[in-house]
Structures are given as C-alpha cells and as structure tokens.
Image 1 (spheres, helix red, strand yellow):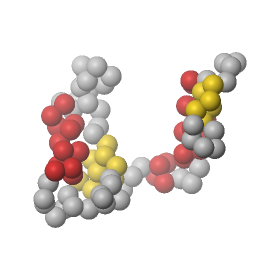
Image 2: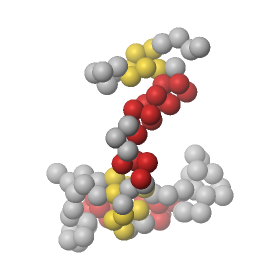
Image 3: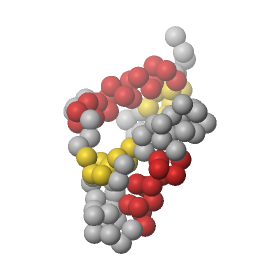
Length: 94
C-alpha cells in the first residue's frame, strides 16, 4: 500500500472561495495521478506532494510538537477533547 500527503493548494471551492487561484481540476490532479498512475514517479510512498511535484513539507509540520499544538488549537476552537484513544469526548465550552 502506498501512502502520501498531498497539498492541493488554495482551490476554488465553496470552502476556498471564488478568489482562490487554483481551479478544481488542477487541485485534484496530483491526488488522481498518485492514486491511478502507473508512472514510476507516482508509485512511491511517504512523500509530500504539491502541484505534481514531490516537495519537502513545511518546516512547522516536521516539528515534533506540531501535532500536539494542532490538536490543542482544534480542541480550543471546537470544545471537543481528543482522548488518548483518539476518540473525541465532549467538554463544556469556557
């Protein structure tokens, strides 16, 4: 099984909005290529991809505590705490 991370960029969707510079076809191209291509370059795993190119992930993503900081921010915004098992449990909002 192959597994990669893909950043489609800022795509014109309901969430991205009309001013996003990337159209939906371009935004999905890398994911589709990695999933279905027989091209040797696509038959890889563990990469970070953007615009059909394997790149280095942002430095912040490589930080050992990045995931912890992300989860803390999500918990603060949503009022949902993610337990050690990965299962969400509700908590009262402050």
